[in-house]
Length: 278
Image 1 (cartoon, rainbow, N blue to C red):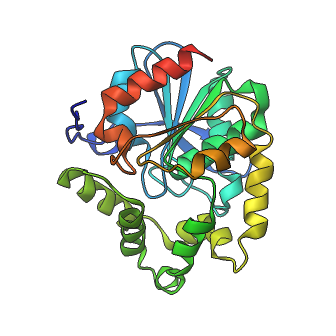
Image 2 (cartoon, rainbow, N blue to C red):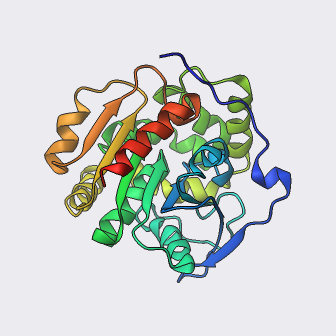
């Protein structure tokens, strides 16, 4: 199949569009946008990104879904947060879903957003239609090891360098230069306290308790669950299915971490096919 790389687009923030806001119980003002018509699809970005990275996909999803994209706390235009704990980020999703009064959303997250989508689904049970996790493996030991090696640099505020080096280690795939520049720019704007808050549990010397929390969370998933990886990982599939027996998992060759942006049409078709069975 030939690759249909997404062309660079102007971000919604840069174009001057004003988002709506929902307020969490701890007072965070969560920015979000809603586009399209149909059943609700919630889109959650990764660490260092914002809701506007979904723009090329929102355009494709809008004829099929009511697309709800949001900025997680500490990102984009969401303000007022002091707590960035990894296991509490799903509160931002809950605030937006509650504000809009939508029922049984399909929740789709990329990278950190995949973890947030999983956490949200585990907390909501059958109130969620299904969950899609894009390139966020939930076996956290390898990521924790990589993050721990950068602890001094993170404390020194070298956020852009660390985040880009972690992305390069994960595998960015054949992204165009414009996308890489965008990733560098948004990461340069990310406050140190956000990264240290989100990655705080990964910086502990013993990742065992953290992994146990994740395993317990996965044990509460009752809705259809699709995991799409930007590479083949034959060891991860049995690991995930041992914890989520009904999970579907696919590796998309060498597309890398941003597979959904490199082959957006293929990605949309896969999501539509998955949703049709839920």
